[in-house]
Image (cartoon, rainbow, N blue to C red; front, side, top):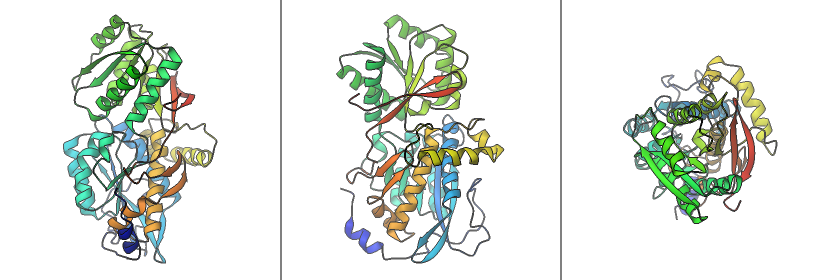
Length: 406
């Protein structure tokens, strides 16, 4: 168990400025960040560990937008009777595991108190030891691979996990399409896709289905042979979790070949690149995700309204969102991760990473993507349900809420 109550009680009474010096104006804080610049309040630094380039750059930018909007909504936090301005320190992990370690160390050197991110499990796994060694808690936003938090008491997350997501999608295709044969396509050596593909395969076979699984090497641009393999196999459904770069190619080439097999994937496919690839075609494309902007329950409606205003008020924000004001689930999760961090800081009443880490186990908030509480054994959010969406001529349409039971 990672929950150290004694440590939490002791550190909750401490107050330190070591991790949160005055803003020097030297970091890239983005549109809504850096609110403390030139102010007289002390600064609490929140690290944003996300890809702005590479295969996952598009999704990383959408997560950052959610964090930036949250920082605009809640730009300060009270610690020990003192108001702190919350400043975002944003780094680009470039979607690669080697650059991820350098980016993580940059945040440690900047003196952040807590880190948010990343889009992409591989970079989160690579950076995890750096944050643990520095005793800085990190809150994963949409990194769904179980290995992100395993054996690391300093990594948490606000999203569901791949074993859950794989089971959800296996149940969905079995119920929705009556699928008996599935073709699973993932990128060789890519943590997110290979992990999710494995969990889907296990769950689908557990439901009595048959699976043919193949992997493509990094840098692949022609997927015609793989698509034909799925057709030849007689697949009722294709499950192809991958980065948006490859996903767009798979969808576009399948549509061009006239393939009628539904193509499905996980949360990374809820992206404008997928919409662009499917638009104007008859290709059926589905994904599981964390949030639906048409959900009018709880705080979701207010978030959607405010976030759209935030996007449309800044041309760069719209560009980073894919050129539209569609609310991506990862943006909602980015917002929730920031609010989770702020709640932990308030509970700890400290800017010290160790105190915030202990307090995270006690967070209980009514968040945009659903209530967030933390499993004390794993550091993961307790999630029981996913949203299924379909890419339909330039927009994602809600299909259903899906659990592993159906």
